[in-house]
Length: 218
Image (cartoon, rainbow, N blue to C red; front, top):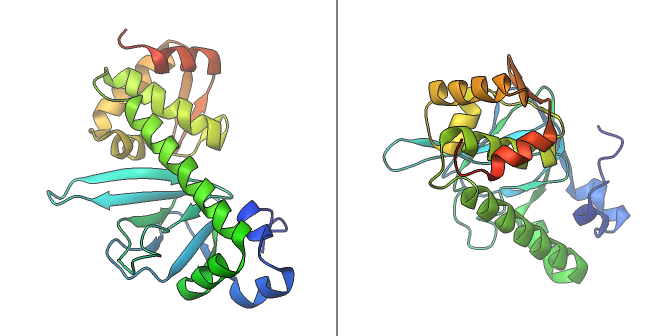
C-alpha cells in the first residue's frame, strides 16, 4: 500500500478512525480494466499510483478517451448520485496502477455528514470540467499536429515530462487514427519538441511545446 495513500485532500476530510474501515485498495497491471462502461456505479475510485485512461464507446462504435487521470484524481463519479451506470470504462495505463475505492452508499453518507468533504468534491468536479473544456477548446478546428501539441502540453502539466501514453492512446483522445498521430509526433520530434519512444512520449522543449499548442497552423 502506498505510504502516501491518504495524501489526497478529499480523503483528509474523512476522520482517520473511519478510513481503514471504508477504504479498499486494489492493484492493476497495464491494460487491465478497473470498471466497464454501463456497469452499475458501485462507488468512488481514487488513483493512488499509476495512470488511468477513461474511455467511452459511442453509439457508432467509435472509441474515445475522455480523460487520463493520475495520483489524487477521482474516477467514476458521474453515476454516484443518480444510480446510473458508468458512462465510460477505466483502464490501467501503468504497472502497477493502485486504486482506492469507497462504496457508493458510504460516499453519500460522508457527503452528508462532512460538509468539507462535499465542498471538496464540488471543487474537484469544477476543476475536472474546466480541464475538459480547455482540452476540447484547444483542439477544435486546428491542424492535427497542433492538436497533438495541445494534448501533450495539457497532459504534461499533470503527468510531468514523460507521458506514458501510446500513439493510439493520443489518437483516442483526439478522435483520429494512430497513423495520423504518428506523423504529427514525427513533425514535433523533427522540431526538437518531443521524443516519441515505445509506450511513452518525452517532452524535450516545454516552451516550444506550449507555442505549438497555441498555434492555429504551421
